[in-house]
Length: 189
Picture (cartoon, rainbow, N blue to C red):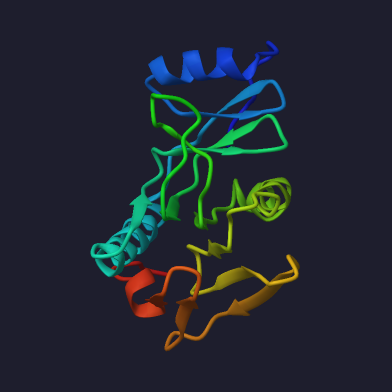
């Protein structure tokens, strides 16, 4: 995440600008925030997760999106670009452009030094308000570590943290497994 623009924008103004822009910006409470470029490790991890989930879900009624799919956080004026998002069942979009997903089932964010506080703070709090969201993964890129949030039947969230290289993360909401070996394939620490 980078420096916010200074002019207050409506969500409609934001979408009109962002859809034409060469660089992606998130939208937080009336402000556009330019997205920072990602490191090699960040891109490898996001690509690895996207590929693993895509392969496991290709015969099921689910879709896996890389970081170019916007997600709108209902109940807020926020539009974000998760590193990976998954929707199972019928995807719902904000409008006919089909570039703003409303009902993600799983969201994955890769942490970096510049975004970790944001991803683990305001962004996490906002994501957990999405009714359709069942699981949220935060993946470290500087060491093997995954933070996993799982919605419980009573709508509380169960948190677990894993750092063992032989771990397999079970994503029960979509019936997938992510091994640390695959998450961190070709990543150097």
